[in-house]
Amino acid sequence: MTFGKRLMQLRKEHGYRNRDTFAAELGIPANTLRNYEMDIREPGFPFLIKISQFFHVSTDYLLGLTEERATTAVDVQSLSEQQLIEKYRLLDSTGKELVDYAIAIELKRTTLLENQKNRILHYEQTFNSLKQS
Image (cartoon, rainbow, N blue to C red; front, side, top):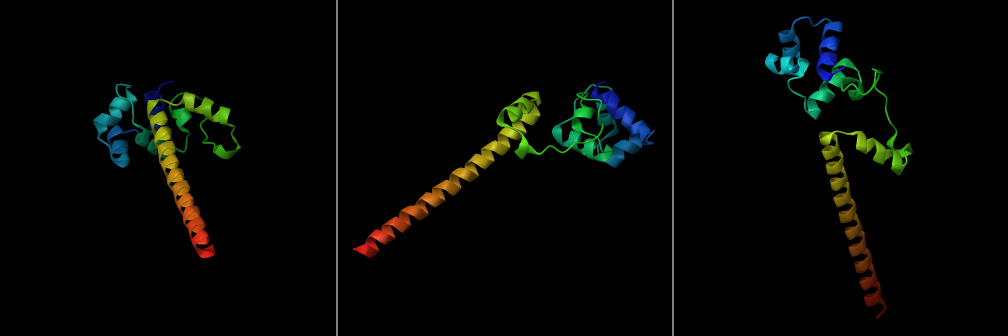
């Protein structure tokens, strides 16, 4: 089932018969909602998350990757590097961009922290050598 069909089904299941009312609740134009439901336009990542949280379903369910509606938390720390790579490969381009961005930020933070530690170590060594002279 497509995203649009799932979205329409969830909207109706939750008692939103009127597309305009539902669009107003989501804070988007009714025409945009119509385009999503008719599969004319694909949603961006923020809207996908918003709908997932609104209906308490997984983004995988919304995208038609699973029939399981429930959201399941994944403990990333328990996943092996290979499993993370496999999950990354399942992402669409937006998801990959978000992961790449998060990695870039963390690498920058880690590099800055390591540089700071190295400078402190250098200053301590310099201070200790001056102290011994």
